[in-house]
Image (tube, rainbow, N blue to C red; front, top):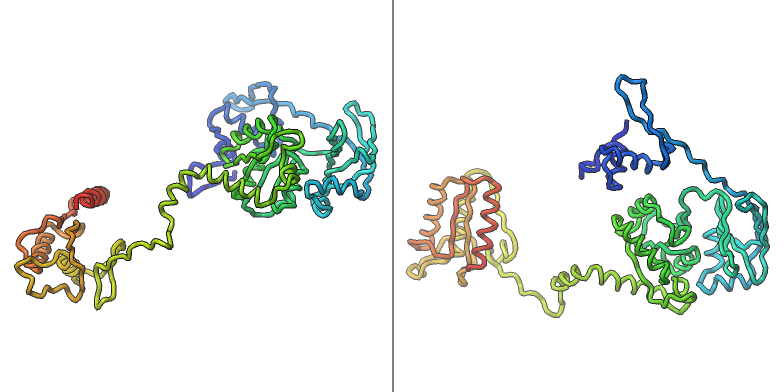
Length: 439
């Protein structure tokens, strides 16, 4: 038995059934969900079908309920033969309307057919011969062909073994990319490729997009965007697909077209004179919409070069060399008994400043220059190590350095050794917040 262990998120740990269940929102410990999980794992050839019988196995001491299913008959692949020919000038002009070149046609294994022969549903043979008015093209692969007749009443014909999921353009995708479009047809895929985009399509806009393919592609592309036709059928289908694939962050982009027969898809978008930059601008406008709250919040954090921020005030320095500046953290480290507490006491004394009666005396801050707290902002001292008695002695020495008999109102000192670490952190955060506004 092989099991997966996810050290970052234990929810994804378990055997193959638990993992498939997690990815599809099912619980493998629930009998009904487990049957669905088995149906999803088609690679095991479990032969599950909607119609099933239940039987009790008597081979074990405990009766075991097993589901007996019938293996569905695989749809017979239609045999076919192709007679290819070179593209005519008129055929290349047809593809050229969408910007598709002969090199792109070759990349996607699109051929011009002189004749196509196959069988109908009853098994009777038939043939189609191309003419100048009704050209015939083929989207070819090793085991199948999808015939495209743009000017005929029956535009598409299929022959060969398509497998479970037909996906045009999948083989031409790079290993990694930023933006991937899912379009409604093969011509749209090639039109996007010409303009420097990555794209795929499935058999039609109404077909259910295989979750497994999108799951794998979500690791390879930062954005996966539905770019369907903007007629009623395309709009309804893209909205449905967006909802079904929301767990993978699939987005939906609508083209600014009228939705008529001659103005509804991405090929029409480019044919009407729009460029790659125009499509990118559409996508950026869409990102502005879905990221509006984030971008608004980020706007206030943007660095304005013409309005530089105020220079951070130097608080602690030695011989005009800054050690601690406003907005930063100054750490003092040392071994046990090296005088860290006395050093901190000297810094606090320098920040408090001397009393009015002791201005003429030189205050010893151990060679450190400290900016005096003239605005009487809060100075907070938290001791999480020493006893209350020792903390009191440190504060007494601090006041003596300043020539003060009492603590100023804005100086707060606390001994937190009696608190747990969790309580200390909460006390420090909340008191700092309170005194920040008070002083």
